[in-house]
Image (tube, rainbow, N blue to C red; front, side, top):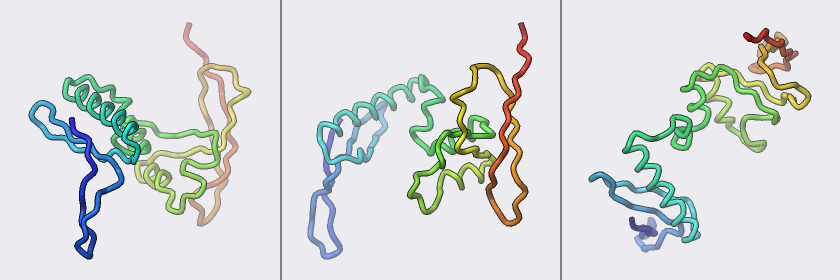
Length: 156
């Protein structure tokens, strides 16, 4: 395993060293290179070991499918698992300062509905059906909903 900071050339031809660390390693005859996204060498070493262990588990067929979201956007991972609705207790699926709402668009494109701002703190644990009835708003791509939980009869 080799940690390095690549040397690049600016448009004017002047060479400089990238401030962020990268890792390169071989596993089962395959070369892996990863950008580690940090300027701190100690953090880069930890991230490099994590990347190496992940590739070892993947090569051995031991990767938990629930870990796949680390390699792709969580929105795609949830859709791939067959999730049809994402419920959040926050005001938005995306960061509050997001201009492009990437997660919203990814989920929408994959047919996954988003229910934001839900408060389940007073709900007794159990099995429920969720009914979320939106307002019919012309020209809108979102709506407030009246959300109701209906307790299921559990099999005993």
